[in-house]
Each structure stands twice: as C-alpha cells, then as structure tokens.
Image 1 (cartoon, protein in one colour):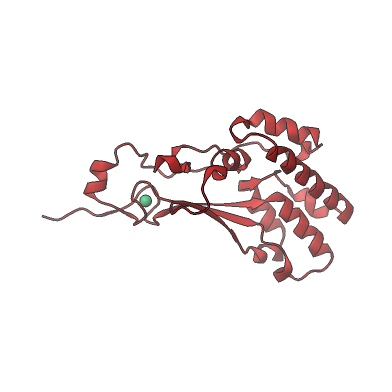
Image 2 (tube, rainbow, N blue to C red):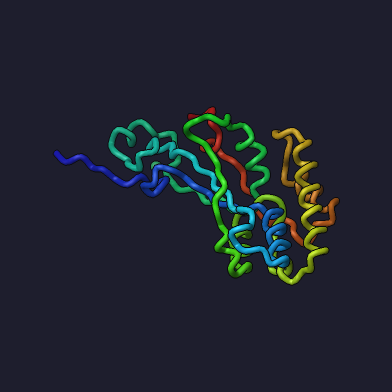
Length: 201
Ligand SMILES: [Zn+2]
C-alpha cells in the first residue's frame, strides 16, 4: 500500500501563511530621508511580514490522509488578501499574545526597493497600513511629505483611541477624510477570518 503524501494546498507546502505589507508613514518618512541624501542602509525598514502557522498541515507542509480525515472544518484554499490592513491589525493582530507559537509578525529589510522608489510605492499598494500611496508622492517636496507624514501619524493616533472591535471601513474612511487624506483613501480592506485568530487553534 502506498500512502499518498501531498503538498499542503493551503500554504503550498510552506507550513506558513505569510502576508507582506508596507507601512505608509515609514515610506513617506524614507522619501524625506532620500531627499536629504541618506544612504539606503540608513532608511527605516518599511515592510512587515505576518506569519501564521498553517492550520491545515500544522506547519509541516504535508497534507496526508490523517489530516484529510481530521481537518474537514478547515478551508483548503490559499486565501488572498489585499488592500488596507488596519482593520485586520486592530481586530486580529492586536489580540495575539506576544509569546505564542502560531501567529507572529516582524519587520523586514526592504532598503533595496528604494533604489528605485516607484518599486516601494507599487509594492505598498498591494497591502499596506495607513494610506494608499500613489506615485504622485514621488514628486512632492520635503514640506509636503512632512505634512503627509504628520497626517498619517494623526490618523494612527485616532485609530489607537478606538476600541479594536468597533472599527469598521466606514470609520476608517471618515477618519482619513477628516484629516484631508482624500487622495489616499483605501479602495479595499483586509478582514480577518478564523485562521487569523489564535483562539481558533
Ligand atoms: Zn499547510
């Protein structure tokens, strides 16, 4: 008898589900530093990675007959999320205990993307926190960039004052509009599902 051992379809055999996203206020800050001729290695890291142990294969990347029998309740497909991550962060990431062995996030060096800053703008548009940047920011002067940076920081401050479970798309948009960030409104939001909460494991 041969046992069928398959690569896990949910994490594609990686054992982990990972999402990269970019911090819009750090990008804007780095653009200011670039104008002041800072070298790439002195820029702040603006990329975060969320890493979740795959709930279908339990992290070994293998989908065997035992798991096939036991994991009926878990969605087998890879989930694609894109857009603004602030609701995801407030509702899910904020509930993760710092020491747990399934859900984590970390900063990653992305200095090389700034060799040609349009690259970091393009990446950030896929998943980001704060505002959805566009290539117009690359033509801004330092004062405009500073103003934009301050507005994003103020946006975070008001988000932090909000109860995590109350945050909605409507509230985020309204807050950004109040801060005159209309040119950078998110067109999509990422929402957590049960895989993104530790209580589920
Ligand atoms: Zn898996």
